[in-house]
Image 1 (cartoon, rainbow, N blue to C red):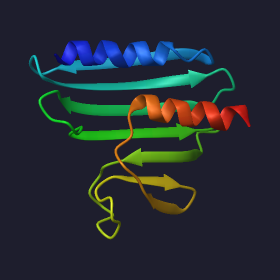
Image 2: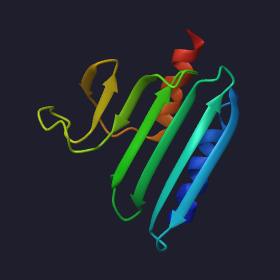
Image 3: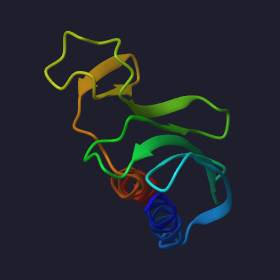
Image 4: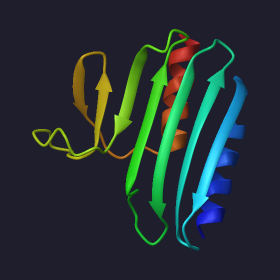
Length: 122
């Protein structure tokens, strides 16, 4: 189950044509649980670093982080579920954008890559 989920993530990444390179690291704990981390480098030098800890028996990810940065490694945005902004309605899910913390649902890797594609088209 977890291997199938990881293959789905790889397939999602391959759907985006503006990717220069991809690095992935996976750790499978058992048939349903695992960890994946990666760096996607886009043609413009920007990058997305991401991590997911997942149990396929659960709807939500155990832990996630999607951090999009420019070529100088300055953060453009980051989604995560670290439990440090308990004052927002979507706690623990949130988005860091510039100096703001925004409410956010739990995004998928596809959601984040689609958002990045929209930003890059501008």
